[in-house]
Image 1: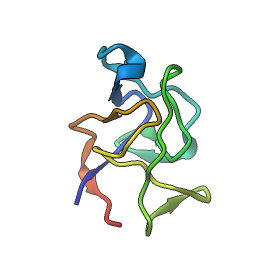
Image 2: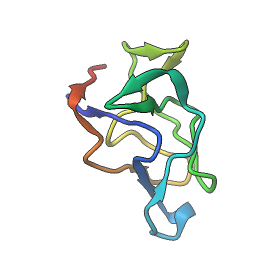
Image 3: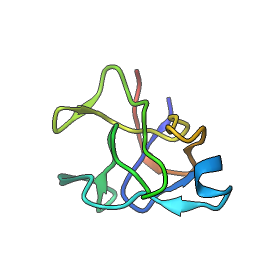
Image 4: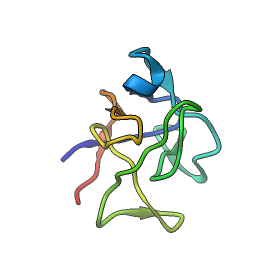
Length: 89
């Protein structure tokens, strides 16, 4: 299972010109993973947005984002994420 993604975890894609860019707030401010708000489908890094999330784990009504989940700009959420929280689906 992949690790959970959080605000400040990185996205790399052609839309970010290959530069790692952090996922920006708000995410899910009421759900903290390792002390940071959880990232979900629809959260972004400004230049790109997460378009895939867990099919079975929802946070504040949205699919939870995980390391490896796809972005609209052709990239993905990069490791390591929150290694203490693995999300299926």
